[in-house]
Length: 148
Image (tube, rainbow, N blue to C red; front, side, top):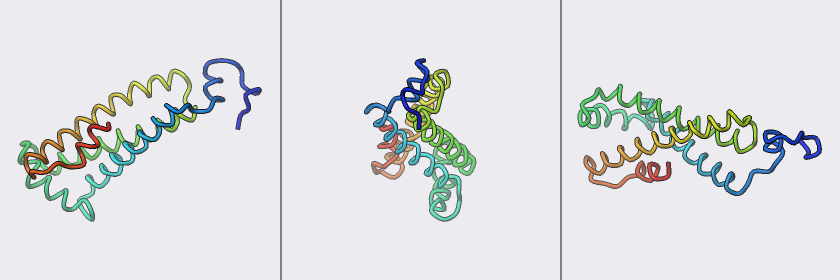
């Protein structure tokens, strides 16, 4: 644990010595929820057995046909994208919030987080609209899409 007197007074050193602000803690909380939800949801989506068995069947018989794309390929592409974006956000917000990234890397992470978050919002919103149309029900992906 660094003390303030051991830090050289540069922007990066000050960032590593300072406590995270309330806004950073809120960002870390939201990033954790989004990252875990999408990351674990993507893993379930990629696994055609266990809890993902019903989802795999729906991708093959309903969603793939609805979108005109092979269901298994669609499920794997969406699942892999969710895993990558979700865990990127999860790891990145904690590393940045705890001051483990230098200034340039922090700025790059923030830019890529915007892209990952928008991508997850599009996936969640699209899934929710498809569920509303096909299943005639409002579903959890819309909540994640709005949160992302």
